[in-house]
Image 1 (cartoon, helix red, strand yellow):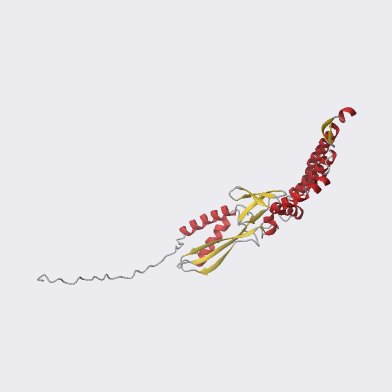
Image 2: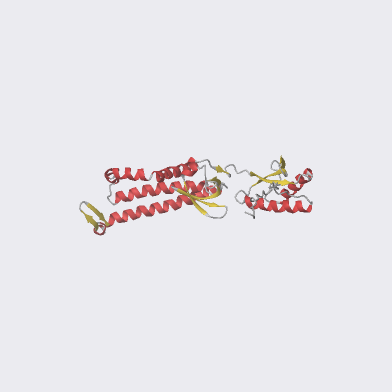
Length: 289
């Protein structure tokens, strides 16, 4: 058995890999794989037991994965007789060149570590980044996967979440406030308009009606051709809120039509100036000449 383990598989100069070295590296790989699966299961079970589903356990699992696989990779290289220190020292100039060319990659890498450690943005959080409202699907070491309201998958560099201002709608687990603007004709009964807007809000199941989240109506302004109102409401349906707004607009327009309240459209009066054509007559010719 010892002779089999000492069998040389690769031998070049002073570098040799035996069957035993290969088996030791494979053993380290298996241990790392089992350890990652075990820790992932324990963390997930712990969060489920505490009824916490804030997505933070995904970040913790991801961080453990990177640490375990980094240590396992270094250990496997050492078991195979590869000197990591020598490799780093001999390729220092190359690494500097690579670092200068991959500054954004390293920036995303550091940002990914910060996201995983801080937990300010977690999986399943609804955030606004680059003008898009998205749901976080996965946070990796360099990039994160998010889905838009149109169910498109977008890859976002992690530095976007660190350097830019991000609105996290699910941080405090409270409902968010939304608004719908509507203008009515000046001849409309403003009290009736307010009641109809509130009735429309009450009819939608995604709109909260409990104190202190009851919908309200604001008399916004006296517009050029309309009385402008704003329906303010709260909802937990953050990601699909555009669908909620659409349903509310259907209810509002139907209610306005039944109550003969018109929504004016912009009108412009254009005055045309009359221009008289000037006719220039040619000088008369003397036919007798």
